[in-house]
Image 1 (cartoon, helix red, strand yellow):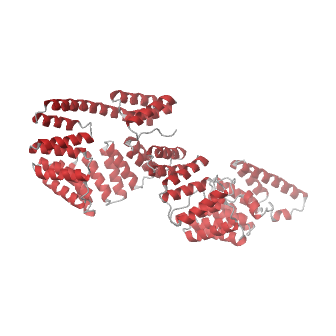
Image 2 (cartoon, one colour; image 1 turned 120 degrees about the horizontal axis):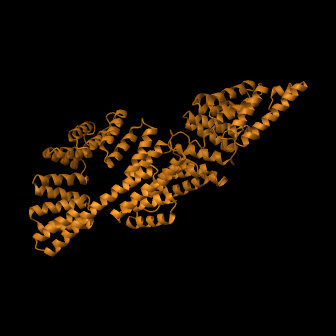
Image 3 (cartoon, rainbow, N blue to C red; image 1 turned 90 degrees about the vertical axis):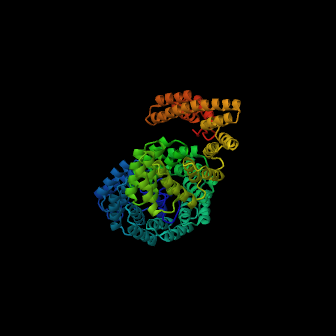
Length: 614
């Protein structure tokens, strides 16, 4: 997150696109006059004005210059530029006019034109400190680190006792990946002007990237002591706390920063990361969405949002986020891989295959991508292709237990049970804690008629994962075939205890109880099994309607989405996710009371679905 090679955050590097409003930004004409002493607008040309006509030109130029500075104060860059261009034509030998025009051009992101103006100013007055500073900053924007250092050093030599010259040199060193020199220069700037909170904040940021956490925290704290409302210091302190796993403190600082700078997308991104670390995924998603609402073209934020949506059982929305990440940064292999995994979750195997293939073109030979491609082929029931991918992946990762397990699954689907068993054994030997390998091996051995070995493997799976309802169910089925009816009934009862809506377990237990002579118990289990099967069908219908509602909501059809969410609830009234999605849609519709009631129902059915903050 914060390391020695991480580039500076743009809200504390002097941005040429910022207006000259804050002391902590680029040294503009107004600021430098305060720090370095006012300069005569006309330079040598004013001193040489002898005739009355020349005096009139000078007076008009000075009046125009004042008008340009007023436009800058009011944020009217277009007017300021027009005025300064006029002044430059009137007095082409004025370094101050060229410098001010350069500043405006920089603020309009016309960096090359700005550089030309700053160079003209310096040609007219080589000792013009402000122009050296502005040129250094413009060269940083133009990615010329060596040139920026040269100009900043010139400014320091001319004004060694001015903090801003050292600050500019620090930024130039930082851009040139010379972090130690950058830290030294900012220390000098702080020593010259210790009451400037922005200098403490910037020094803290460099120290954090140098992994000097204690010193960095002290600088951020000092910045906030000097100016409690400086959002950048709250942001950087929060990022430092997050790096140090002091999550609660990080959330507090980042929330404060977001209140002070509600339009800063990066603050919301880090707040989203911190809230996720704190286990508040719903609020984390909202913070990431807020960041993207302010600045949509953030591929890393889109990717992080997709990962969170996957974890909160909303894979369709995750697909949308990952698609945006891929669109914004198509050369990032991991984004294609993540999109592929989300597409598998929503059952779009063909599209997933295309994404994994793209990831492999970008990063050939990656065993993880090959394994995921194999899973996509499994989903498509293309078992030959799946086997090929798993075997290819194992050539570069022969001790990957999961790859052996997945290869075993593909071989099992091809009815090559002996080969599958060998892979499952290998997987369980490489990773004895892989419960799924023991479970699937047990089921396969059961299908081969080796009941004793199957029982051992299923019991091993249960020891590793005591809440493994499916393993208890399969164990009960194996014991039933072995004739161990009492043990089989006990295993099935445990499966039901772990998963009360396991209709198959109720049905199998009914058959065993009938064999044991418990006709009443058998009838009760049979009725419950049938009822659960019907409910399962209703839940599938509700899931379909909810997914449809999400798609409509993403397309902007609010009324259609609400209709689908209500349909889902009619099919299955206890489907928590449908109530939650309906609440979100109702909130967007402005029906706050109805939304609150749906949020309450969703949370009562699933406490993880707590209402997000408005």
